[in-house]
Length: 424
Image 1 (cartoon, rainbow, N blue to C red):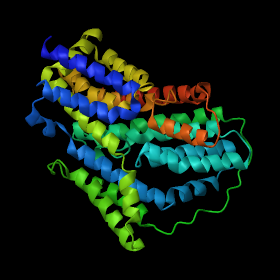
Image 2: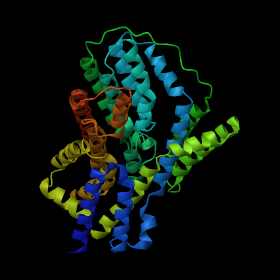
Image 3: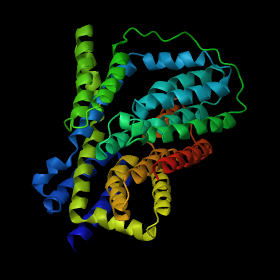
Image 4: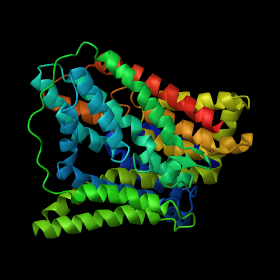
């Protein structure tokens, strides 16, 4: 068995194990990386360099700042403000969904669901209506717009670092509209879908008292992180780990402030505990495995297979990448998928003699939105269903598919079309 075949076989085993043992994904990825090193597929000296430390630092810092933002109660206050300007439940669901989408462009999708879903649950209880479709709508909307900005989702951070894109590049890149416009176009077209799905829910909404917010510093830190990332985007030759240091630096500043403010280390401990270390370790393992696949020639071989199947046609290749990404992301986690496929689609573009951005953006559109088809396709969906189950509600697959399928197909089709029109 040559090295390429061995590397591909090991990767296949790892991916199956990632699907079967979802709670142990970080252990599986690290174990696979260790096997790659032990077998010489990835040199030991190259393992630390294979890890994208900038991505890990951006994720860790953003997670910490988001936790402070949640603890400040500002997201709940903002959602309640929306409910004061809507006429009925139908528009309340749309408003909460759009709000969760906008927030998730800057905050982790799961965190967004945890912030907004309780408000939707309270509205549903108040008017004695079924909360299941309300929470599902919030979850799929939060999963939609994560691809709009550099800090919106792990997959966006992966793309930004792989394509050397700064915060501004998601909006305007190489003289053309960035991926954010495609994502927002898809998001806008989901509003009629939601209005139609909730067309019978016309009961009036009477929001309760506003949630008190006593600390506005975390909100300033959230906007401060975004502002600093925008400024950093203006410097093309900045150090590689600039964005990571920005996110971690702002988070540490917030932790220090809250610790001094409360004269206790309790906040610092809770924020540090909130960081998803397992996802960070999962990514570290995946980075090493993907580097091993590249060293063994697997990435180029997969790219060549795609080109052969697509008969060298750019339009057909683009449709294949988007469609396959939507389909696979409905059932598998999009983080390892995007991390694996970014080098593949880049290699495909090189073989066809075109820039990689068309395929990279199509990959992100398909992989991000495809998770909305099924209840297990995205962590935000799982979080929303978990909230419902904790309240005693049983969510059937058909309940999710009724919203997820039309929502995903419309958003993915429109987003992919906009990417094609701009970048083809």
